[in-house]
Length: 123
Image (cartoon, rainbow, N blue to C red; front, top):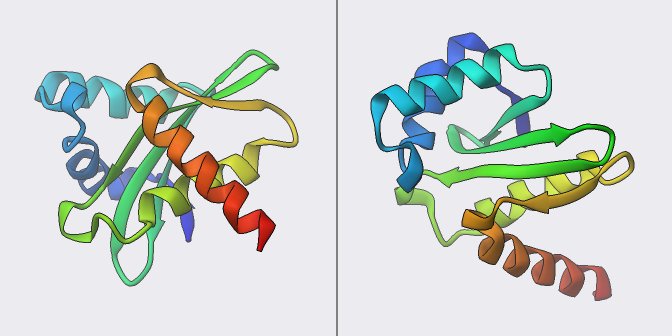
């Protein structure tokens, strides 16, 4: 289940985002978290089952696009479909108001998830 990022979950969120190659640098990671905390157009969600296992970040651009810009899953819980679940849930959250798309760095994964979603819709 997706939950909104809150300040008390900052260390968990930073840990998850640090698995992304572009967020390895601590200063860059701190800037990213600060942006999610202060910018009303940036939305960070965490994926919680028994524990928090993943993070997904969205940037709203004007009244047009919701851009998925961060996706990360705890390495010990990868290949279980959590990333796809997060992508699909965020798409459901934003699709009525925005065109949902993904940053170039995660476009390939986003496309795979979109294909997965279409298969599920056919069932």
